[in-house]
Image (cartoon, rainbow, N blue to C red; front, top):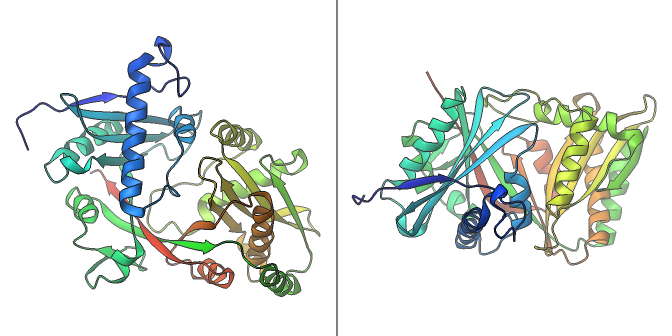
Length: 372
């Protein structure tokens, strides 16, 4: 590490990508800082993956860093003189999980392994601690080849999966006192999926999933379903495997659903949802979400998928995923692949993805550090 003074500055999130000299929103400096942070993120994504499929667009990033009533989000940029060393960020849940903080650190390639990452991490942790947070969580992503070929793995505390002990990101997290709680597998599906394959899978699923009606929507949940949809969003935060992570159930209501939809729209994200309605009770019992961005037209992100515990074992997961995949292909014909993420211990959902044709495309480590 050199004797230069590292300057870490909070990024003033601009009102727009071209906010110019709007001093109320950070002015020219705020716009420049924001774009520099985003450019660093894009560069790292290209270095690691060779594409921007996992990277938010500038519009998405701008909307995200504005925060919302449910989460305070803070972004910082670090410089040595005029050179950008890296970024760090802190996310602070406001309605639930108020003892936790999300921490991320990103160091420019030329400044790695010089101690600057630790300085950024210490800064982010200090921000979280100052807000009374006693549990920090973060993640790192690794290509599948890096993990699958390594024989010395740090095992996840969940009991499933692990990450290479010698990988720089893994070493960095472990030395800073973080524990590997869970590993998620990223999977990719090549598009288009032939119609006859979707037909066969849909027939197989529907033969088991009797007593249910498929419903779907684009971007905005119908008013008559939004209360039930909020219930499912709440259960999504607890019914999926979370290993030993200090995460409480999220408190979803129709207002929160609408806020998320509006935020996605402002960020340029389009969504397609398929859900299963249980006819005897009139309740939604399963749903799945796919997102697409015009700025990255060849890639779809498969997001939440949930079948409530009392309706599992009836092929609902396969049924809703097949229906949503068919709708997504029709709506976004430029897409050439779908990316999705599942906990390694979630064997049932991974099996459904395998039936659809997904193959391993990377791994994500979920890390946690408890204070005291």
